[in-house]
Image (cartoon, rainbow, N blue to C red; front, top):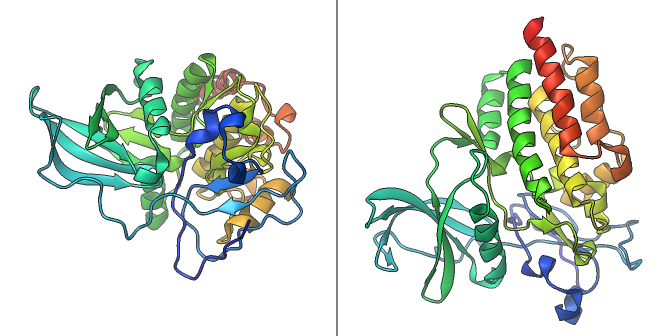
Length: 351
């Protein structure tokens, strides 16, 4: 398979792969070798993964995926879907597709419409709709309906106001502000609580990152983008994986996520998020996604206290345990993380 080198200024978008949850026997031959599909924006970088072996002994291949930024928008302002959803404006565009604000003409309310790019296929969007429809929790966006327009599926969802955690972190960084410990703990507790609910249902998010976390006015914290959710019992996710390099666990990069351990991928990503909330920077960083992933595989994460002196020893120990290279060395569940965070929050409040 040919590899690709990104030119300066050429950025790979986010992507998902519908075959993640399909039986491996249905995969076309060119998709049977281990490969890593990246979500996130990067500059120049080779797509080979030197020195890393996948489950079949071959090196995973880093492939840019997602939307071609030159292709036209999926929908146009004023377009009406199924005779009842009028498109008002584009509010987000990424590797899986686009999200629009629309007006539900029947109920006279604003909703969000999510539609996948044509090359993605219908399964990830349908799977995301089914996952969201299975829960009623403030930490998850409400799915109202699954529709079809001109042969393409779309999800009708609750229209959220607010900003992503990623945008909030950028805003604080621009002002030179750090996040208070109690606020960081509150956010981590909210994220972990929703993850615990998902994991208890046998699912794992698999692409947890600040860009997929919405902070709504009033303090509500919502997890978004379940397009690459994993089912814990399936074995075929050893071969085809997706993720964002800053938040990818080593076993994801190696394409060897074992059955029943997908939730530990989320534990690792939550550890990275905790590090970012406490220090304002990720534990590993590089402009080249391949080099960045090699850091996750080979380098020891720095101590948060090296960048922020007031990080409690107990919290630092928890964060570093979540960033363990081996899944077996991390907390065995998000529930364990929740217990520790609640205890630390209580102690901080009593101080």
